[in-house]
Length: 141
Image (cartoon, rainbow, N blue to C red; front, side, top):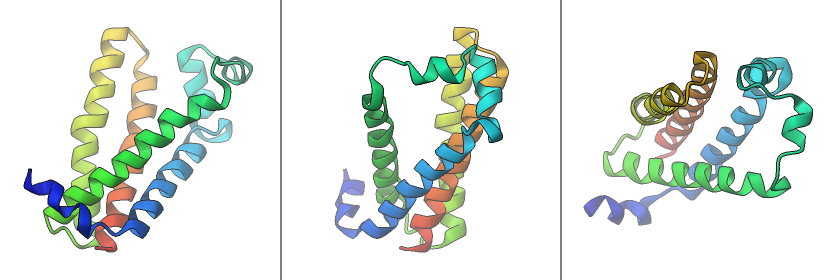
């Protein structure tokens, strides 16, 4: 597992900025005034429903952990592949997001019978967030 040896070469400031950008993009993306209202309609929920989800603030912990791990893994892979520019890091992350994140949404939402609008909104968020995160990391290599 030679790629793990690149952990020591991670720019932790880049990882932090990539993580923050992902969280901010998600916050803005799912705001009711942006795509949140359409997303809620597509999943059949209201703002009130989402405010009353079991778990309270604890629902945010897995999301934050997943975003942090995504940024760390992107940093390791971008370093291992020596993608040391904004465009190279962003393009690499875009390809990963299209194949793994958007592809996962297509598969899971398709079998769950969710409306295609849910898939487009969620996949669009993941594609944008990962691409920006990869671009930040690539630029700061």
